[in-house]
Length: 115
Length: 108
Image (tube, rainbow over all chains, first blue to last red; front, side, top):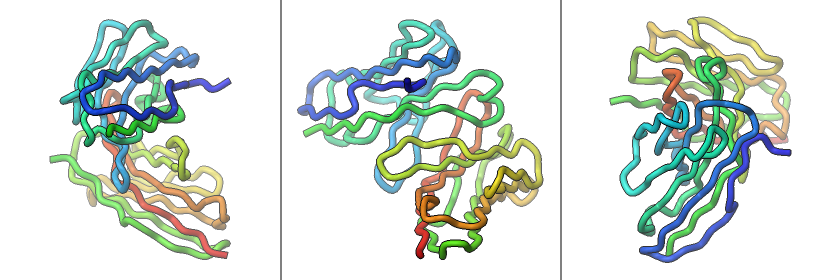
């Protein structure tokens, strides 16, 4: 079984709709992250969380919100989707040891298309 | 601001050695990481340099020089399966910034 899972894997929606992307992990890591990847660009950090009570904005948080429901679950919401939010979204995890050594573990990604 | 620069594409022949460079304009970070991403796949961690110098992991080596704001990933004995995108990233433990990636094409 995959250590970091994301649902859905693909989603097509319309402008103005609310969308939630979910991430679950069985690695027991305390740190979780949401990234966005556009073609030809690297990964841009949207939000990160160090534990259930800790949520922090990343580089491109506008238009997004997150919820850390439990240590193992971190969801990303687009309250009112717009076409330029069409991208590949990755969830990632790390613990203090791996995080301090630059290693994050990524989920398989969610391909989101906003029409 | 904080930025990392990598070549957009590199092409090499199977069995050869290739070096992918990464220059950065940021400071105070813990270390430099490298990730591999195949088309349609998730990024996977390759290596990390917390200190200046060379780190070797099998066919892959990575180097960091903080004084030169420069690092590189060296891939030896290239195989067709090494065709992928490679990202450098700087991390502060709690946050990581990625470069735009280098697309490596390995030819037979």
